[in-house]
Length: 567
Image 1 (cartoon, one colour):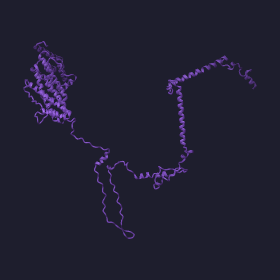
Image 2 (cartoon, rainbow, N blue to C red):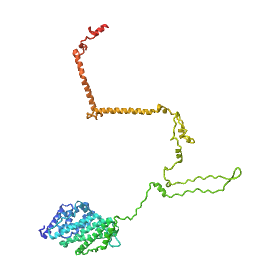
Image 3 (cartoon, rainbow, N blue to C red):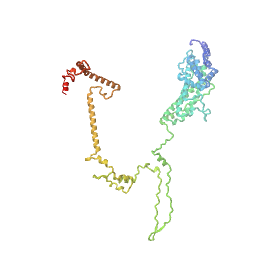
Image 4 (tube, helix red, strand yellow):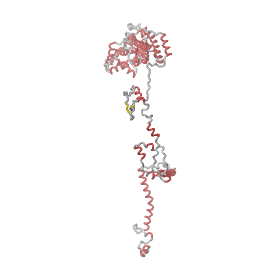
């Protein structure tokens, strides 16, 4: 393509576009959308036709199925990645830019979703070296793609679109203020750097060389200029808001705000130069460029001086009040209530004294009775201890002082009755069931006399001594047996397991084996007796005495027969 003349390249591009359209009519399920995308991004160095862009707007609207939207984003991304022609690439970027500005917001959301899997606008390696014009325009195409990508990133931070934002009405400006005019400090320091970075990418879209005179490049540049007005307005309102609150910021926020303020001044100078170049464009003749002014230098010095003296932490306007809390809220609530007045004693009218004559006839005043004491209510707040643990009962104290039972000394002797007269004298005037239990004579003295032995010993004490001695002997015997068994089983590696009972099947086999051993041990003695009887008499059922050389009983010549005859 680089060696072909310009006419041949245009013809080759037209043939390629017609072939793509014919294939879309036959093979594509979304043939109307494919045809619109191909014709809107063809190889002709003219801006996309409006009717093709409207078809794309309709396919990406919220009323259409989501599959149409996804396919449109996929088709535009495929168009960008496969082409090596700067015209096709630039017209595809223009279609995307116009859809972001004028189309449904759902297209922007789908584009952000698709960019997570792979960036649609990643064109840092794009190059068209077919001609010097193509080389210069390739540079501008890469810069334009970076601006559109930064536009999406700025939307992630701001969470709203600069171009579609509605200005808020204000008294000082007839057009209204942007949203940054009323933001708080934290949000303002977050959004202003994103807007400044977007403006920086916009200023970088300044065409150079032969690309500046190309009509298609100027058409795309006009779209960028329209974006710049709203971006600069948002930054300017944010700077005004930031300056108003600057001298109340802590030191760290003041440093960030000063950096934002300095960068906005530098961007204002660069944007002024960019506007000076773009004023000569034919498409920008009807644009109203804003007048940019640089901040005064003395104000910058005041901001730097404030940073040196700024507090490290923000001052809190609201006063913090601390309230003391007590451990007894019930008493505290009682104290908060108004203390009722002490009820006064009823006033009694004084009557004239009545004269009474005594036995002698002299007048004597009648004795007056004392009025009953007035009981005043005591509030819980005036009581130190709610349970009354610190109070001393005088009756209990008197009983404790006169209690002689705790220190009673019983004299030794044969008095079988306990002498309780000594310590019960103080209770002689008192009667009750408690004193009846103490003063009543007890007849249960059997246990005391039976358990008492001669010499002052107690039977229970002796029994416990005997039981202790018996237990010690049993323990010593057991320990001795264990020591002996341990000494005998020193060489036995299985001595530790001898105290554990074997399983049932093992016990049964051991019993059978013991029976067999006993039968084998008794077998030799049985054989000796059998052999002896067989040798003495060939008849096993004969007389057993024949084998011993002795006549049977009752036979002459035997001792038994002689004895029998004698009998």
